[in-house]
Amino acid sequence: MAAVNAVEPSGSRGRVGGSAGTIGPAGRKGRGLRGVTGAFWLFVGPFLLGLLIFVYIPIIWSVVLSFSQAQNTVTPSTWVGLANYIDLLKPGPFLDSLIDFCIFAIFIVPLTFVLSLLLAVLLNRIRIARAFFRSVFFIPTACSYVVASMIWKLSIFNGVRFGLANTVLSWFGIDNVAWLATPSPPLYWVAIVTARLWLQVGFYMILFIAGLQRISPQLYEAAEVDGAKPGWQVFRYITFPQLRATSVAVLLLLFIAAFQAFDEFFNLMGNSSLARPPLVYLYYTALGNQDFGRGSAGAVILALLIMIVSLAQGKLFGFGKAAE
Image (cartoon, rainbow, N blue to C red; front, top):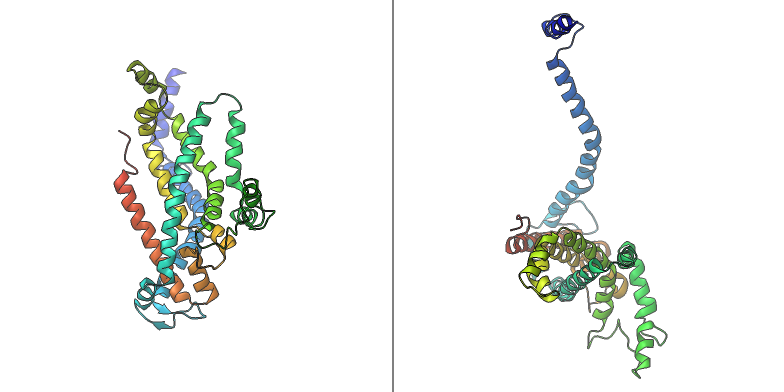
């Protein structure tokens, strides 16, 4: 039997490319590759087709529109070159909207970063009801921005006596405040920033918790042996440096999210010039005034700004580099 078993493989190898009904290893490999390739295009093809139709073609079309006069039409009619860009970059509502974005980013980016990191460190240390507290802070992330904005506008900062914010102020003898209509001081920023803060802190807290759980316990043991005091010293010399990659990613995401702010401004302030970020201004330009040329030019400027700042931020903080 051993002799027979020893002969059979050599016999099968001898039939490679021989009789018509036999498939050799090369043939089976080629058929396998064709099968894998077919399965790849079967699953990925619809996604690529949708990406091409709904993402890349609209982007290219928007760039073409930005160099054209397209009033009340999405078909480029007259080539105007850089006129739309020059018009937008003159002192006016578009540059004012960029200033509003900068004010919003100055508040929301550091506040979200600090609060989410603080919550992550605290929740990573507790041993009781950890899942409950994580869920409590993360659940607002699943809430719609529109719904949250309407709650903020109608129940908390509605400016009348029975609003939650004014009720709290009345306990201290302070008169009612028109939160969303007071230009000086600009109290509307309180409503806008707190709404966004409530919605997104939980998401970034989860990112920081994931980063904290990747830190080796041996580092903390070594720090204790070296005499580092628990608390601020351990956080400064061990925890925070180990969160470098997570921190850079969080900052990058926060900045992009601030640039894309729309829902809370649109629902809280409408088209008010008090606080109008770039996307709200472009929405009213393109869909309100039907000026798709200027709207597309503004969208291209925003995309370029996000790209430049993201690249500069990644270069400055070393995003994507291996941890030291």
